[in-house]
Amino acid sequence: MWGPMKTRTTGGSTKITLTVPECLATEITAGIQRLMDRAQKKYEESVDDDRLYTIEEVFGEITPGDCMRGLRAKEDLTQKQFAEKLGVKQHHISEMENNRRPISVQMAKKIQSIFGVGYKTFL
Image (cartoon, rainbow, N blue to C red; front, side, top):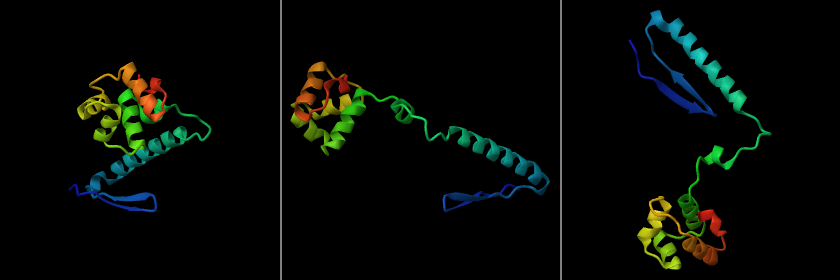
């Protein structure tokens, strides 16, 4: 009979206990070992300390809204405070950060003049 899996994490490793029917134990153990070998091989292939990664590889696609949200977080401002500094309504900031409203060149240049960040970052 299949039993619940128990895990215990210690020192960067996780101990997994699995109760399986005795008649399947050898086959399941071999399958788990194959999975572990495959995972270890993929891990070793992916570790390359000299390789440089693009920002897209690390974070995925970064949108102008993500840049705006990042600037706001860096400046430790709420959307309302950010909106007041830019002279717009708070919901416009929310829409721009969530990519539902485009950031115009005029708005990007206003952000540049207030926060000193290159306006092209937001286009």
